[in-house]
Amino acid sequence: MTTVALTGGIGSGKSAVAAFLYSEGIPVFDCDAAAKAVYDEDPALVSRLEERLGLSLCLPDGSFDSKALAELVFASSEALAIVEDEVLPVVLEKVNAWKASLDSPLAVIESATILSKPLFDGSYDSAVLVDAPVEMRLERVLARGGISREDALRRISAQSFDPEKIDGTIVNDGTLDELRSRALSLFGHLYGPEFRFCTKKV
Image (cartoon, rainbow, N blue to C red):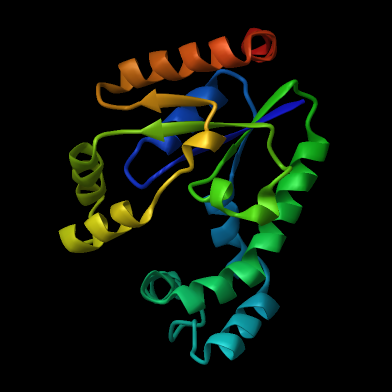
């Protein structure tokens, strides 16, 4: 099985490409969603994080305060390292279990950070980047709401991708139909037989 790391910065359209691929019959694992689910699935992990970070991560109703954690790790590289030390191994276990369950010649792991995390080396065979002009990414992020222009720009500028690890790039500077066409064309070009096998099964 060929496993592709699908990556891209905030506002690039990575999730849209993942959705297109999934609709074509290609299994997709969403690392960001899996990481968020960990906090609800494992109270002991949240307790360890609270102890190591020295603060509460729960709202008054007892639910996990994801916003507080996001603000903390964005502002502190030390806090980010602690969170990743606890969460990434759990996510990798989920990735490996998911891959073991598949009967497909092609699979996609969607993650914004996978290429920069050595722990995930070996979990994928190649990588595809979804990219877009900064102003377009900024516009998309702001349209979602919940974040200031300054924070959005900081997050965009903080993300980088090693070109030596990228096997193909999908430029998302047009319509969704154009994005879909470019994504399917690139995957067909890079992973022809595997891609055709998956799409024929749909």
